[in-house]
Image (tube, rainbow, N blue to C red; front, side):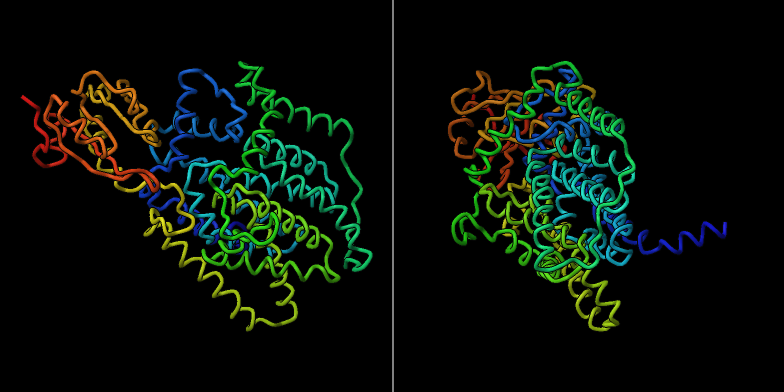
Length: 511
């Protein structure tokens, strides 16, 4: 028992970091309505119930892994918002654990600082509470760097298998794996060239490799099988495997044309854009922003491992700055290496006994991140003026979904209610109402022939056209779905929802 307590005491900082990270990512996880993309991801997982597998579409720009993870979570725990978000939450927490493992290469202070910065980061918490693919990409990117450094420093066989696993995970997650792997590869010749004007200290020559050719074949052979397994829909659709390479043409076209997600207000010269740096400054990602500056220290004679990380992370930031397509959640794919770089400079300062000055630097950085993190995730999570809030569903949607779901759960035949949704853009409603069997989705040119549904959703501009057609008494519920979309109106049948909503009907049937 004494040994256990001693071990726990030695790891109390790591335990505290993880507990804070878990609390920020799990607490009140359902206060934010399902995002547009979450609704689409949940809908894809729903289709697997009908088809038995995920049919990969190379123009979807995302690999199949997250859909299978969401499908598993919903199968185990039901159609709950927290279950939809559970896989991304786990990936986000595992990323912090993976950062803590960098103590093997950079020392415990650097690893702890990087993990704490990620635990408190507004971006990592905000998007770690979203059911999107990016948290998986972060996790596998961290593991990939861990594997590269492990092969470089020790050559151990386990790092070869970690290399294969992390590359496989990245390919299964998102097409941007090409960008991240490419930057790690290109950083090698840059590192070798830079040693001539500025020799590294220490140099860390490549260790003798302890793995064999058979190990290599096994690791990447299993990787190939796993890729085919998921991309072929568990071996049910082998034609979809070609999407592994076909997707890059579509992804490159979207990345260059932006598809409405360009941020031209931040353009510099030519293709360069400082949007990500502006986001770091605006959203209290100050540890990462200072880490960008700290990376310049490794131009001078320094540990070649840090220099390698500095080169690769700067290349990644530059690549994302050039790509026209910019959605704010992409920022989490590039922040974390800068935590390591700043942690290294902090560790170096500590070794030179500049402790007091260090506290004056570190505490405000992390306090700023924590302040904005709490404000963003628990108070202004649907405020369009916040840069991270992007195509977010408004809380107004609860005026429609809460009564409908409450009645459905309280009535044995509740999920047989009839609904008509007449919106040009209606996600996340298909996921929220995914258990209902009699909902139709229409547009302005294709309308129902009868108007006696249990609930109806329309653009508010259609009220004067639709209301005379209603053949039942209804409660009118105005709401906004998200920014950039016209106001909506929901009609809830009075005989079903009057008691739940607690008011009399607004619309009476035309005699």
